[in-house]
Image (cartoon, rainbow over all chains, first blue to last red; front, side):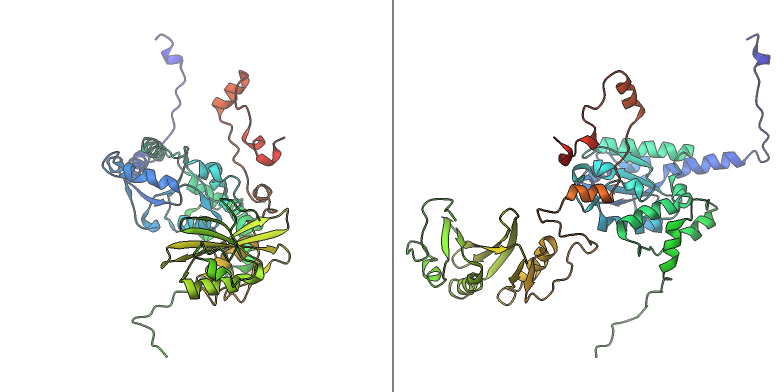
Amino acid sequence: MKDLPEIPVAVTPRTNPFARVFDEITAFCRSRSMFMLHYCTGCGAIELPPAMTSRFDMERLGIQPMVSPRQADILLITGYVSVKTLKRVILTYEQMASPKYVIGICSCTVNGGMYWQSYATAKKLNDYMPVDMYIAGCMPRPEAVIEGLRGLMERVRTGEASSWEDYYRRYDYYLGNQQRLFGEAWQTPTNVIQEAEHYGLAGPETEGEHTALLRQHQRPLEPLEMRIGLKERV
Amino acid sequence: MLPRQGQAMTAGDPSTALGPILRDVEGARITSTRARRSRVDLPADALPALLELLKGRAGFVHLSAISCVDWMDEGQFELVYHVWSYEMSMMVSAHIRIPREPGVYLSVYDLYHPAGFFERDIHEMYGLYFEGSPDMEKFILTEWDGPPPMRKDFDSEAWVNDHFDWQDYRPDWLKELEEDGGGVAIRPDEQRFSRRK
């Protein structure tokens, strides 16, 4: 203990001593109340009912299923994603409010799984949207699902789970992969670039050749026609 | 066409319930029969007549499926019409062969309306065109612009390699194993069937 005074101590000046405390409290609370939208595309969905219900009881961790993407924090994709489904998954993902986390369950989301040879199944989910965590297995047992969710909670608490920012920072890359699969005319109702600016996350890779292509043919959204009562029959 | 089971029976064989019907269809013969199930092989142009007779005389009112087989080496498509009779409790599968090129056949929509769906599906998956079918638009693969994927000459693996990336998965623990001389014996990208020697 003699050399104790010689050890350099770094003192970082803080302007607001409570700022970090509040951030930590927010992150802690966020990690303890996660609403999960499970997009059950494949067989992995079979393992979710036991994980949610009394046997393994996801809710004791503060994770609950949610009915709508707009109110959900986690998008849980359970199993293979066909090209048609992938479009819907991307629409769902873009509707979710940030911060949002994506978990891919089963081998199929990782690398196509047993459908690696299929022309209709997307192979690598993180080509099309940022994935926070993969839970590998075919299918993973509920223990593995719980373990993965606990891992995500820990990452949310420490602030490591920030891949949703990556979608805004590197939107051009993700859009390019989407266009490669869906064709150049692909567009979603969400204006991701505007959202990126709103969150202050627009960077040099947010826009590029693919977003330029998108802007060329992007049609503005038209409001849905609201009508009360049945349409009169002619 | 050789019989699969038992003895070949001619169309006029009185031992089968179908005999009187098949007698009127030229070239049709029962090539295999079991309890409540018969296979009939016939020339392609006789199929509408057979189905009409089966439906009209024996109550085969339920067309449960049309299946298609691509015999690429023989340059033929095989179409199998599965019809079921509730009165006779019997399934008849009528097999016809048509040339692979140009791959056009007649629709049986006017006899069996569900055929519209089956024909649309076969058109999408095999590129076979059915004349007179009500709708030959895309059915399930609405976003597909490639060749018909169920044809034998469609190389699904090459398509996948063209259109998708593979996950680059080399975690640290695997690198450590590899440094010690272990690791994955056959890497996933070498395991593709088409690359196997």
